[in-house]
Every structure is written in structure tokens, then in C-alpha cells.
Length: 241
Ligand code: URA
Image (cartoon, rainbow, N blue to C red; front, side, top):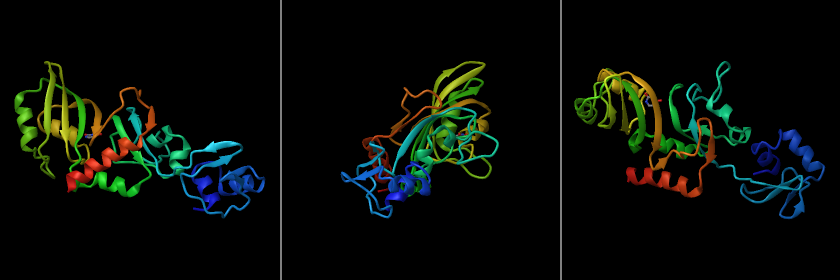
């Protein structure tokens, strides 16, 4: 990749701003000053800008504890989006949310700049399990567990078998953990609704082999380690065979 393109992808500045930095001799590559903006560099190799080493990885993966009230979208003219919660570096590297959570849903949301991997993670063929914790109206009964397991008729489709664990059932409301392998629009809310319960709060705890880091407060995020990412992607490939 050209040096000026790499630096602008890493949000060091616009293409013309990074060209100016290079012209002023403020960029070093392989321990020498780089004077040529068109010089070829490999993302990941060490580049210094203004005497500070720059992390030049362009493929990045992030987990966020999505807060309620924020849209899963790249941008919106009126409402805050999950990308607004990340530094501009991630947007300029091309990080996009892997799937979506409803505006009022919290919890584990992944971002990656690896579009092909995102596609595989979202493929309906891969049956990636997603685990949610749901607070719903009314007392959940064992017949809901059986209905989730059988598949529910949701009008335009019948849901695939899902696992429902009732954690606490009270007259007013109940708490449950749900595992689904599909990701249709309002999937979990519609499944509960088909059993006569309204979802009051929904939080995603797990996506495939990746668990939400419980040290992340709502709105906080961190990059995934290579180990976490490889485990996630390998798990999905193993499922597909
Ligand atoms: N199912 C839903 O109903 N909403 C979500 O945000 C995710 C799964």
C-alpha cells in the first residue's frame, strides 16, 4: 500500500495532510526518513510519525458493549450510531458492525474491517449461536421452553429450534437466557411475542465463541486479541465443515 494511503487510512490526516507531513520529513519508515508519499509499505510494519511509533494494522476487530438508545448503523443524520462511539481510526480503517442489534438492545456488538470474515459470520448457513439475556413480561412457563425448542410460527417464517433457559419466573416479569442461531429482524422479541410475552430488556451476551467482556460498561469497547478473533472465525468455519 502507498505510504500516504496507509497514513490516511489510519486517520493520521487527509491525503493532502499526510503528503505534507512526508514532505516535511516527519515520517520514518525502516529507520529512515520517507520522502516519497508513493513509497510501498506493508500494513503492520513500523512507521514513525512525529517521532511516535504508529500501529499500522488496518485489519482490526472490536467488541463493544452497545448501550441502549444507539442505532446500529454507519451514520445517521439525526440519531447517535454505534460508529460515533468509536475513534475515527476505526471508521477510516473500514470497521463495520457485524450484524445489528435493535436500538433498545444492549450488549455484545462486533466490528471488523475484514469484510469477508464478517460475511461468513453472518451467513445463515453457518448457524452461529447468539446468546441473549431477556427480561420479559409475565411468568415464563415450561411450555415456552418447549415452543422455543420446536420452532415458532412467526408469520413470515418458522424459527429454527432455539434454547430457552428460565432464570427467574415471577408474576410481573421473568428473566431468561435464549440461544438462537438465526438473526432475523426482531427475532428474539418476535419469538417471545409469539408465546405471549413482551421483551422489556434485551442484552446480547455471546456471539459464537466470543463472550461479552464484562469489564466493559455500556458504550465501552476494546479491540479483540488475535487469539479471540481466530477462535471466533475458526469456530464458524468448523460449524460449516
Ligand atoms: N433479537 C431482537 O429481537 N432484537 C435484537 O436486537 C437482537 C435479536
